[in-house]
Image 1 (cartoon, rainbow, N blue to C red):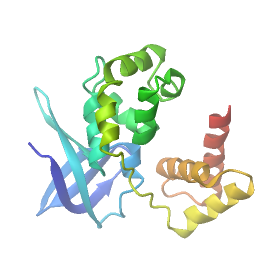
Image 2 (tube, rainbow, N blue to C red):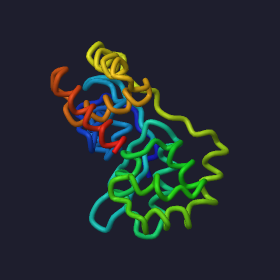
Image 3 (cartoon, rainbow, N blue to C red):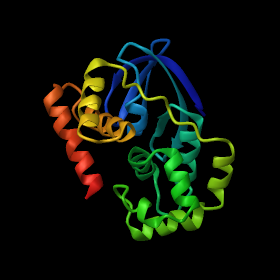
Length: 201
């Protein structure tokens, strides 16, 4: 069973990445939080891996931090939550926020995650409230954001000038660039504004 992988990043999308390890390419399904922090293609990457065994296949899920992997494994232990939904949940909320929302029984916050309705939020709280305490005790670490490039910084500065906080702007830009990875300033800026507007609605 593969638990960790290190190699050259050959290809990436918002849903998966291919890592070359000594000439063998491994495809890993990834959450958006991992995608946003991957290096450029050709760069070295190391990922924590959950191996999902199916009747006809073996699927690998990759994460930048062990805490993110642990959260994923907790999520798939919940009734009705499979690997795809668990990955979508981690794409829609940082691990620290997920732990806090479940620990505080914040059904409203959980219900804002795409694919999670009121009943699913209740189930997450019911089945994981005690379990996330162990995760929070280990100290949840978020992947360091890679928003060091000039384009991202320019958009973040523009959003700050409109009155948004740095954390809000960074989150919006990460999501916008994930959707529009090759787009120019104007398109990413507009997409980031749409995201911020939806959050305030």
